[in-house]
Amino acid sequence: MLADKTGIRLTRDEKIAPGPFYASLLDTSMLQDQFATLDDPGKFTRFEQLALLSVHSALSGAGIEPADPKTLFILSTTKGNIDILQKENERKFGKERVYLWHTARLIQHYFGFRNEPVVVSNACISGVQAILTGARLIRAGLYENVIINGTDIITEFVMSGFSSFKSLSNGPCRPFDKTRDGLSLGEGSGTIILSKNPSHIDSHVIVGEGFSSNDANHISGPSRTGEGLFIAIEGVMKRSPVTVDFISAHGTATSYNDEMESMAITRAGLQTVPVNSFKGYWGHTLGAAGVIESVMCVYSLREKVLLHTKGYHDPGVTNPVAVIDKVIHREISHCLKIASGFGGCNIALLFHKK
Amino acid sequence: MTNSGFISRFCSIRNNTVVVNNKTEFFRPDEKPEKFLTGVYQHFAIQYPKFYKMDILSKLGFLSVELLLRDTGLLEKYAGHKTGIILMNASSSLDTDRRHQESILDRANYFPSPAVFVYTLPNIMIGEISIRHKITGEGTFFVRERFDASFLVSYIRQLFDTGILQCCITGWTETNGDDYESVMYFVEKTDRPMDGIANFDAATIQKLYDKVK
Image (cartoon, rainbow over all chains, first blue to last red; front, side):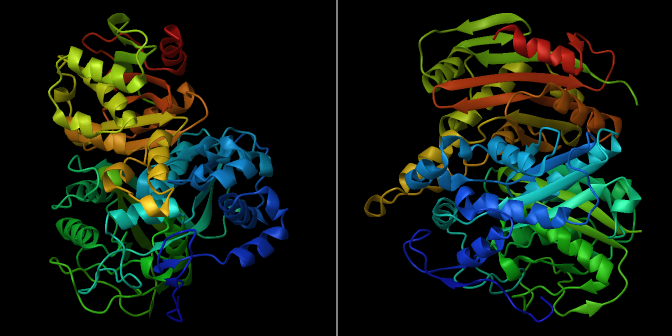
């Protein structure tokens, strides 16, 4: 990212789409080689391999005991093992594998988590919602450690759907830019461990207030006034009136999303706060996005760096916001993560450096 | 910890029967889910043409909330952003997922449709209910193998205790092929509701869920 590289490239894969498309995909043989260090790749789906690898590496050295009754696993995903609906995958892995609860159970049993896992499936805000859910369950005293994994893969199912919506970009996506023309899809997996126990924490970052809301306006289009996202940001800022140092936006690079987000940011009086979108680096990873992007927020806080918005060149939203267009190194204490998704859902969540 | 809340209303739609607050309101045996739900919509003379565009999961959730709130004025007591919708099921949006998958099986006959694809997310049902009732508070969808009363109660109590919500629509809304089941509760933070039926705790909502099974 510091070297301005992107994983989004022109790809041909007959299994995913009839023609060439731009997306950020993980190399299958690389993934399998990596997974082979953990287990037999033949026994696990692509989704499971990704999620297991991510959770495994997050747990390594974290000092968390999975069998601890105060430890919970949360999976954030929109489509999970949706490619099980293809006959050859169903034959190979079995019908039951398509259920999201089954996937979460498989991960639970793999690592030996004692408690029944929870799946959050809330469109594109799933990841941030899962982190907020984990933080709330810890604050309520129900758990001491919560492991949150967000994963989604790019399949023909997802590609054909977004393509039918005509929301895909003709090149790598360009968030908040004048020439933006849609989103780029990406696949990936991210894991965050929340803990009450200070000896498990080396990030020096704490999860602050969070607020979710609904536009109550349209199931597939964001509110033109940014109402729902504004309610979420205001909900957070009223409860925790800190000076936000940067905003990690959803920034999908569709015309409507970026326009709506900049309007909500402006309505909340945060239009001069530096804002970025990570979508230009690895695309929109759907149910994984909120977790992976929150990992980057933690990185930014810890490493004192504001990362630039890959693909952004010229202002392209009606309400100008302070899009970060070059890497800036400086002290950062408070980060606001925001996201919005189909179904009219919105979320805002604060991260603070201790 | 403040008070734990009260269940004001309860509605179930399953086994081709609609039950509201323990009273059977409608029963029509031997119909497939989609036909039965259209029958419910017509029987209660609900006027909302968008109903016909919804997928089966949204239809089931939408009707459950219609009948849960019908003639109660319950929502009017609360600001839209203080009202939440927290739902759970086992199969996510699998019925519609299968429909979308069928539309892309054959490259020579390839017809993915945005009107179908949008429903391949279970929280779209929450969006539909939010639009219908102008609910702008939190809407979160959880997936679990089975109805989990204690998880829902813990999660919603936390939202009540921290002042994020004052009332909440919650429950289980599941469709999968010929199987469907919806059990919904309207829960208020207040400890003295006008005509509440029970305390909001895991044992009570589990008992109400088990009742008509």
